[in-house]
Image (cartoon, rainbow, N blue to C red; front, side, top):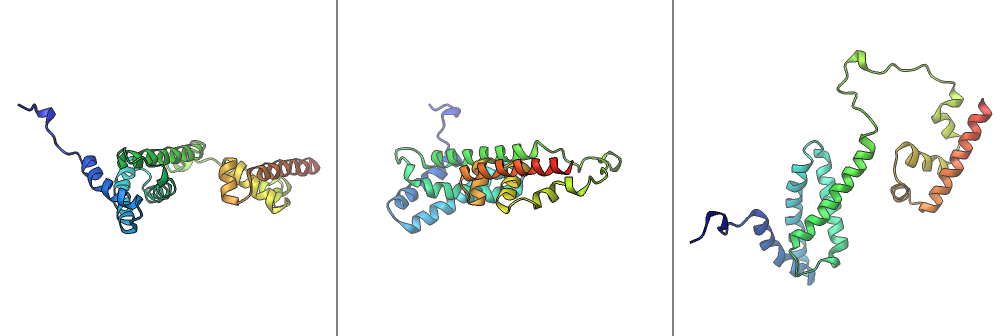
Amino acid sequence: MTLPNECNYATPLDEFESTLKPMWLRAQAGDALAYRDALAKIAQRLRRFYGRRLQALPDEVEDLVQETLLALHIQRGTYDNTLPVSSWVFAIARHKLVDLWRRRGRRDNLNDSLDDLTEDQHPLAQEELPSRRDLAVLLEQLPESQKQAILLTKIEGLSMVEASERSGVSVAALKVQVHRGLKQLAALVRSDS
């Protein structure tokens, strides 16, 4: 006699795995059509996975799906065919989700939403400081490489690695540009005082 909790009901993940694994194994053996079909099936599942977790950020879902598919493509050689494909896929997907939360948390936690404030609660605009002390004016006086390095790391808050990837400049060169730019900004502010 089988107890109700011991019944062999296939879960959606089991069904997903049972159709995905043969496709993925054929893809790993060089079958381009199986690879395309496997990625399409994975993308469909990832949209649901991310959609449930990012209901407040629906614009991020498709970007995250594409990032994950790219990571799967790049890391496909790391797949161990003795393990479920879905476990490997969702391990990478969870890492991509954590990366997104870290990026957004670093940016979003720095700012409170002004949308929830009434008109009388909005901060008053302060009188403009003299133009020489205005950051935008000061930044315009720097060489373009130093200005970009400071904007990416100090204004946008990107890590050196993220800024390096975006700018195409090595991390070491970026650090030098930031250092020299900040030093020159300080000299500009002192000369204006």
